[in-house]
Length: 439
Image (cartoon, rainbow, N blue to C red; front, side, top):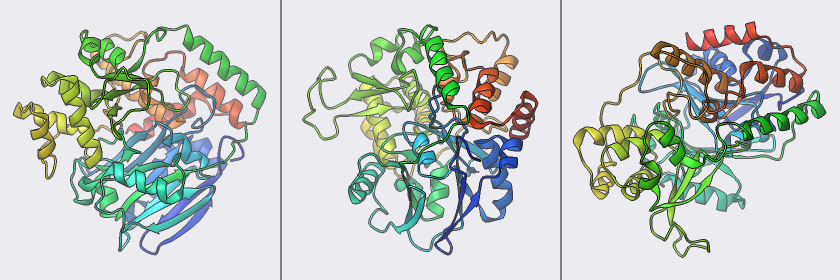
């Protein structure tokens, strides 16, 4: 693959501590496209070795709107079959710029390690100092030891080390779309973290036309139903929580977008300081960035204040436990004391509902957000959501934003991918790949 690609598949053998590389073959891309199409294919190739696979989409890290997504694919401890988790913020883009399109992690290390991917180099390094640390301390230590605050991290906390089915792989300090227990999978491999940093460049087949059309699509989005909307609060309102703005108002500090995404899907709240403060905060950890809409909504429905919900979400992130699962479990108990909930996280167990046959993360709301996709009926909505997520996971598009923007149609996406790669991917190929990964 010459364009929109680093042309590398990294194979990491934790048993031996060795790495190797394969080229990303054009035929594989023509048949499986990218993202979960290729991670699913790689999973089948290595499934006897319990692989965890990181993968990028063809549009990941480009100027195409919302090209922030990379994915983790592995067998879920919660379902027993292959599932896929999104990771965004800046980490999805950073993976591609490390010089690797896909990373296949095999086996188990005898001792705790972390994987350091940077500028086309892969190092398996000792993580004894990190083992036992929470997610926030681990990210801080990795950035300090490497001397770079821009390093992006995929990290497990104590929940993953202890083998909890509720353990989550977090991104930097924050909750992620991992609702599958992948934190447990990394813990079983003695893999504490994957650190990402890259200065790579992407070649574009028809660069001038590709860039021009990206800006045209951005302009179309700017004039859409998203105009004037911001943050988690407007998403909650679109999902029917009419009082969300008033509920969140006492703690909202600012909103934050993922890489190249024209809507800030994340909201930073202040828990220990005045949220209207514009100067440098006095507290080293004044608040928390809300990245999980479903978990926040579940805590709201449980009767918690926005501040109390924020404290619970922060505790979940530090421990590396799925906040949506925690919210579902405590919702059944009626517990509303945030301190009691935080104390219960150690050793927390419980049954969490997973839709039968689900492959994509429920971190993404199950409805269109803002945009009108012309849907009618429950069956139509379910089918639309699955297909829309499949497209996002294949091409590297932020999966929440995919549910906001009809402007990012399959026709537009395919046209831009073909301009960027010089390939001739067809609608028929896309339909077949979606059928394969959803079956």
